Length: 169
Ligand code: X6L
Ligand code: MG
Ligand code: MG
Image (cartoon, rainbow, N blue to C red; front, side, top):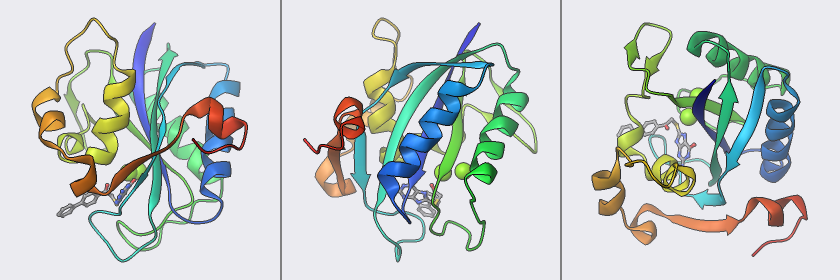
């Protein structure tokens, strides 16, 4: 059994409902067990900045699926939820990115692990740091420490239980 870390993002449609729906689909997959769930953050768009703010969070999954099989399952959930790939780095109703899979380091056209650009992305590292196993070193601690939430346009939006109760904190 491996622990894999996944980033979720949404910035069009009902963002909260999309995150909940994606979590429900992950939790209901017989090959996956949702282990840890971060808070939800509202984050300023990066890359292509002329688009609505995102809600971002991370989860960890316990799985026996191989990394590529897990990646394809994540992309399948995006498809099932009606994701349209239009503008590169553009708005999306749901995004599921495989960040880390156990200790696996690999590089292929379809999948590179750990995710090659995650160290530059505060909207990934902030929620990931929250759910990282407490007794193991966070590999992006230096990058994490250099971020200012205010400068990065990141604010805590809700904890997961609060979101499920449709309450903001
Ligand atoms: C220079 C060039 C600086 C490109 C940054 C960063 C491109 C991130 C793409 C970049 C660059 C991305 C999200 C987002 C996107 C998200 C927030 C991407 C892909 N996804 N902004 N922008 N949250 N806040 O999930 O991650 S597009
Ligand atoms: Mg992404
Ligand atoms: Mg993606």
